[in-house]
Amino acid sequence: MPSIATNRTFFPLSLRSYSSHSDIFHSPCQGSNLELLSSEISTLILSHNGTPKSLYLKLRSNLSKPIVFTHPLVDRILKILWNDGPKALFFFHVMVDHNPSYVPAASTLDHVIDIAARLRDRGAVSRIISIRHKARIPSTPRTFAVLMERYVNTGKADRAVRVFLSMHKQGCIQDLSSFNTLLDVMCKSGRVEKACSLFRVFRRRFGADCITYNIIADGWCRIKQTPRAIATLKDMVESGIDPTLTTYNILLKGFFRAGQVKEALEFFRQMKIRCIERDSSGCGPDVVSYTTVVHGLGVAGHVDKARKVFEEMIKNGCNPSIPTYNAMIQVLCKKDSVKNAIKMFEQMTATGCVPNTITYNLITRGFCHSGDMDGAEGFVSRMKLDGCKPNVQTYNILIRHRMEAGDIDHGLELFKEMIKGRDCLPDKDTYNVMISGMFVRKRSEDMITARNFVLDMLERGHLPRRFMFNRVLNGLLLTGNQESARELLRVQSSCRRLQKEIHL
Image (tube, rainbow, N blue to C red):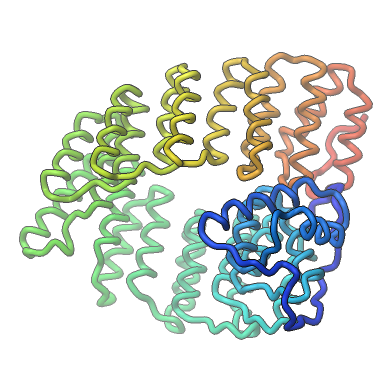
């Protein structure tokens, strides 16, 4: 995994002798204080451009009061910095090398390994593993799950298998649970044939349980191969393992995902009959089953049927969950009207079911799709008043539709608001939306702004798509910004993951 070259400086992550004396940051924080303090520290980290030692001194002098960098606090800071991987690793280096009493938790090490692997920085991954060994912190199944997932997502499934087979060398025993994790990673990336092949090879060694078969069935459903999923169910029963309600819900969702609405409804009917015949609610439809049917019918355009199933659910004493309301709201926004979605939202709050970020984002997107941008931003304001913080998806929705409507300046203001808040850093999708928006007006200055976005996303550890990079390069050339194009090519030459395709 070659590293991304940016203009930031990386330092060796060495392990110091940890002493038992109290740290200069000596006041622990909990609850809401944790959120406030993590936000304050993240702001200091993001604005810092010096050495690790100077950041450490900055944290000592700029914080309102001395604090202890507890494991929850460090993990929360790393979570805030997730979309700025280089800064997250930089902060971790500061904690390890300059805070004498800090010993990272296993969860923290897993988190930074995930960040380093996402950046494809082999050196950083190796250094973090070295720190783990020197601190005598054993690897966990989560450690290997992170590495396996990252390898599979970069098209290196065989390396993921090798990571799994090497677990015992790191003191982590391979068992059915870890094997299921490997199968799950394979199936969720669409490599279901590979997962089935591994299952056949290692079945005698690790055995199989209901979770194993559920993972494989879900994998087939994800690629719309419901006959193979049903065959997996039959194999499961023949092996003496009883399907669970989760198994049936996986198949139910698979039918809808494959567009087999008629088959899905028949399968749902059979689930209800089975419940009556056995006089048990353990095998009958649950809240997940009803949510799946509501969403599936709605996506297929059967809004009235989705409503009836929703009402039937309540009549049968199965209270809708937040995901159920979200499914119904999404259906109404896409296939009906935002007005009716708002009514469902009010019904949701009236029952005491608290909307989450997804709920607000669905209605915000609904306003945008209907062309009511003011209504969308007004609903985001309500979201804040209700105590629900907008996330990166919230901003991406607003920015995308402002840009598509040609309101570039408003889109740029939203981006600035996002950056200013610090708690919600832009992700790769945000930058792609911003860069695409710069081509609407086809101005020379907009191409310079697009170049700046490319540089900024590289600095934060996000790799632009080759198409997007070349598009910006062409835009700079066509608008007479040759020097800026040369600068972009110089950056490209220092980034191993970007192949140079355009020569000046």
